[in-house]
Amino acid sequence: MELPIIQVKNLVKKYNQFTAVDHISFDVYQNEIFGLLGPNGAGKTTTLEIIETLCDKNEGEVIVDGMSIDTQKQDIKKIIGVQLQAAGYYPNLNLKELLEVFAGLYNIKIDPIQILDEVNLKDKAKNKFKELSGGQKQRFSIATTLINKPKIIFLDEPTTGLDPQARRNLWDLIKKLKDNGTTIVITTHYMDEAEVLCDRIAIVDSGKIIKLDTPDAMIDHLIESGFERTKKVKAANLEDVFLNLTGKALRDF
Image (cartoon, rainbow, N blue to C red; front, side, top):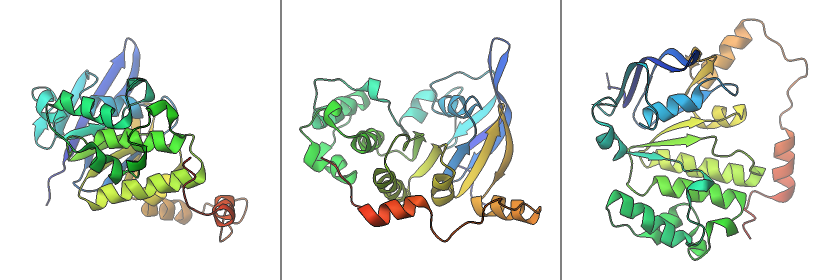
């Protein structure tokens, strides 16, 4: 059987008397999209930060591509890509220059135009980050994760605040990254997003994993338990109406 590319075993993270991550365990397999879902404060982001080597754990074991976060943090950083937040960008540099700066941190040479082209931002190469639309900013944040050609990419709520067109476009980009062989770990509050993108999901609440399975299996199990919606589901929803009326093309101006 194929070994997981990420192994998390009995992971614990405490902040004084508060336990943010409470003995959770899960595996992520190569070339899958794995989702961590849960309410605010459930421990999702803390778990990601530990795997990304950005936050120390109190207990447990985390192995990334055969390497322990306890002894091989620098090696792990070379094979992962982490989505940056807006505050991480120098305001006076354009997108091409920003990518070159980040490449310098990895001590590697890149073709910034090629990376921008991968996320449909080639024509914005000379724009500054603050001049981008919300969807463009999110696509650029994903571009920064591609600089070191990572095996694993971590995306923390990548489509929050985007309009339906930009959100669907970002879904297509994430699927393309997976098709190119990248393993993706994602958090999201949008259940439809998780259902469309994720091969498997772990639902986290109060620092514990309460369910881990494929989206289809979770839905089928709920239906088998006798669950019924109070309102019948139609063949389309309001987002489908919006996209049908306005089109799926991006409005990147």
